[in-house]
Every structure is written in C-alpha cells, then in structure tokens.
Image (cartoon, rainbow, N blue to C red; front, side, top):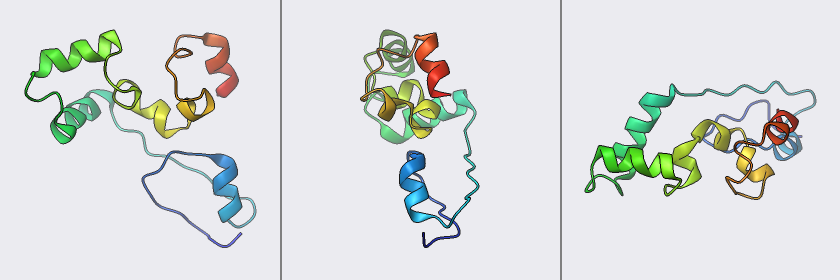
Length: 100
C-alpha cells in the first residue's frame, strides 16, 4: 500500500489496484464518447484504413474486429478479463449484471 494515486491508461482490476494503493482508495475512470472513440481507433490503429470506414463498421457488427474496438469501455472496466477475454457473454444480461 504505497501510492496515493495512479493515473494511467490501464485495464481496471480492483484487486491489483488495491494491492498498490493506500487503504480506502477512491476509483474513477474516464470513458470516451463511443462514436468519437471509434473514429479515433480507426485512425490510430490503421489496420482497417486501407479497407475503408464501411469495412471497419462491418467488422464491428460481425465481430471480426478485436473486442477492444467493439466495446472499449467494457475492456477498460475489466469486463473481458472477468470472462476470459471472450465476447460470448456480451449479450448475457445475467453475466453483465453480475459484473456490474
């Protein structure tokens, strides 16, 4: 328990953060607006640029893109770590409610 604050781009894992933080930490997260985030991902990562925006959107709809692109906020909050990095539970209301 050594830090007052950790400010970093990271996937949230409460047990891991608690191991580094002083007692009774306060957690906060910044989530980006989803459309702006997808535009940014398309431009930054570039693997879909040569195929175009429509191809990128189709990859999100069909599940061909990595889950990071499809639901970045869920990734950052640790959802995919909690379900063994699969998208199989993305529409499982009970699993999502249990995570929340």
